[in-house]
Length: 177
Image (cartoon, rainbow, N blue to C red; front, side, top):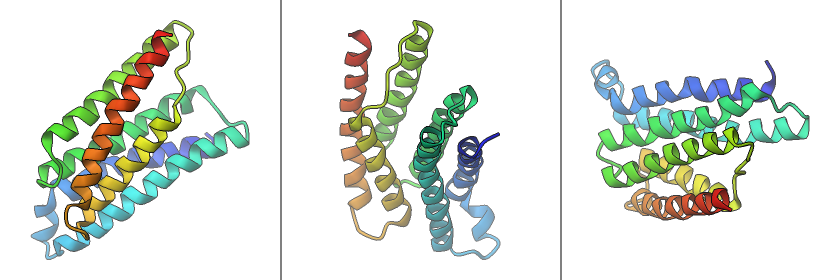
């Protein structure tokens, strides 16, 4: 067990906690906790987990700690965190259902494409466009959780949808070459 894998395990553990805070609010509000505190805590958990995504990859490459387990855990952790955030926000009525469907559908499709490519001995590496997509998705999720600026989260969500489709098409083109 190395640090990058521990960070991925942290993200995997953070995903259900995030979903609990977003989707099961009555548990907490019935106990007297104000919904705004649930939003702050959910945003904190998501932000910390998103930061670990950067650091686990950086540490793994910099200190040569890339493992087969990490190659499985990292994308799984990313997908679980994204899934929990978008589904929780959708249940709260803060994220558009079609936007969530498109984003999550692309994530599952590209994951399947990467599995097929790996089975063929090919590697479809993450592009800079994919990294921008991830950054905008993270910003959209945080903005929709906190709701500090009206329409910012929704605007970022649709920008994320655009980048999600665009980067997905780029993955398909890279795979077919």
